[in-house]
Image (cartoon, rainbow, N blue to C red; front, top):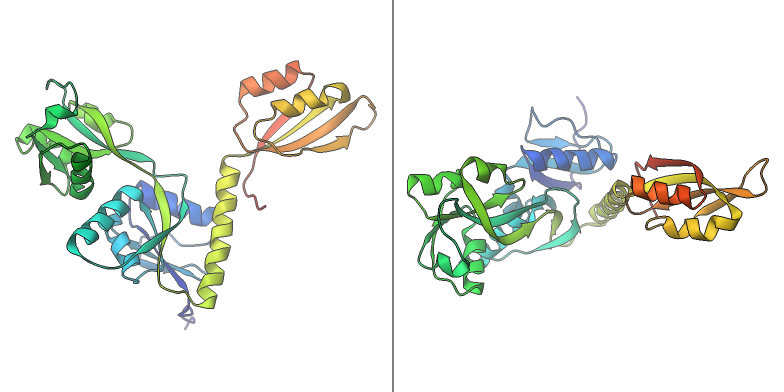
Length: 302
């Protein structure tokens, strides 16, 4: 029989299905952590890193981390903040720390109303019914704006609430806006901006778990830095080198190498921390650069 995984391993909670699940698994893969597709079991063990991945509903992740069932979780800040407000409202304990913001899962919680409904400003919401799956975030926003309205909790299909007569307005997640458009709704204000984050519970980790977390965080940092960076190589006249350096977006000190057979030029290699657009390449060309090559970076460690 195969040996069971050691007990002193990190346990990471991720969404069991949906976009955030795919992005979370892609992040682990980019970090060199091998986890099989989550189709057979809800708890899977990475075979080359001390982490076990638990696949659960997204709104269960904050509770599992805050209660210490899981060491780590990848969750949207909309779900995290809603859960934290709910626990505070109920007087429940348990905390969390945000270890890293992640570069995926971006969306916003927005107020939306039927296209035909007149609207001037937020004061028009006074006394209306607002349907949402995020009652705590919605109530907090209304309190901040000093607006009195009735918040109606719905666990799903919030966008059809106005058509069913359940509410006048909705407060729901918006990514592209296509769902609102399909239901003849228009967004009027943003309640909360969300992105995915890696969180941990506040309990003290063992030395082995602490070491594993440090490695994981370094790898995540490397993956995220690489995602927004490009490696650029070009030939530059020595006389134009200073001007060309200034055109490289977000680069640190480039590597300068002699160019065989031409004493008037050098080869320049640089890591650009920002996107290199066609306009950037055209400006480099006009400054005298040639043989410009831009390459993606898979991993980066400083």
